[in-house]
Amino acid sequence: MSAVISTSVPVIDLAAVKNKQHLAWSAGDYAVVGTTLQIVGESLCEALDLRAGERVLDVAAGNGNATLAAARRWCDVVSTDYVPALLERGRTRANAEGLPVQFEQADAENLPYPDHSFDVVLSTFGVMFTPDQDKAAAEMARACKPGGRIGLANWTPTSFVGEIFKTMGNYVAPAAGVKSPALWGTEARLRELFGARLDSIAIERRNFVFRYHSAAH
Image 1 (tube, rainbow, N blue to C red):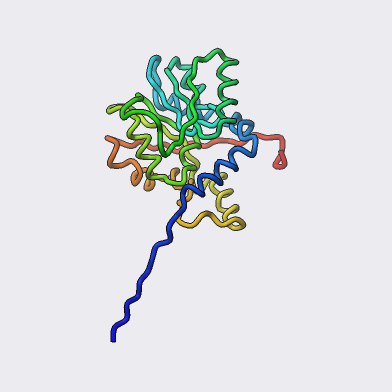
Image 2 (cartoon, rainbow, N blue to C red):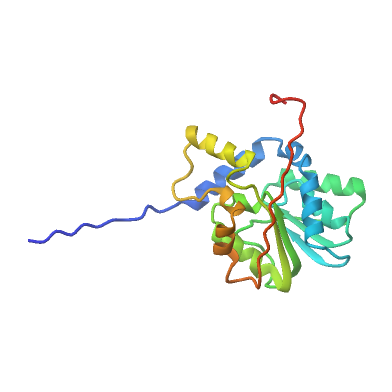
């Protein structure tokens, strides 16, 4: 007599996860919170040494912090997000500054651009929230020209925001099989996502100070 024990890996419904995320990002006024992070977009563009005339893609751009920073450096910027309300806030900000930016609704996991379309592809606290991390990383690399640059600003697992993720997980269980967004803030995960696609990876740890009236604020 023989016994056969079979095991199966649960199927992850990434589409359902994405739909729930879309509802969450559309429900709150994340543009207000995002505006407080403007300095991060500026710092990222400086780290990437953006030059006037370069074609730049901002992925999961939100209300456009990195988008505006790149446009202020006279780059040709395409700003994308899958939440129309956030794109509209970014468009309002760009118009107020007289910055010519192309805003387009797009999914970070399925970017509607030909291969090698951009000199620079970047994201600040955006692409890290995609359910299918490998696919999003592959799309960013695909859209970037050979010899181009990919720039990311991600929260780390040990940061204040990383600790918030852990606290939330104690009360609302994350979707089964979906990796933590904070892994994008680790060198090991970035090398898993991009290592074979890039010539080199440079990682720099920086601090962001949250400045508010109070904890309640």
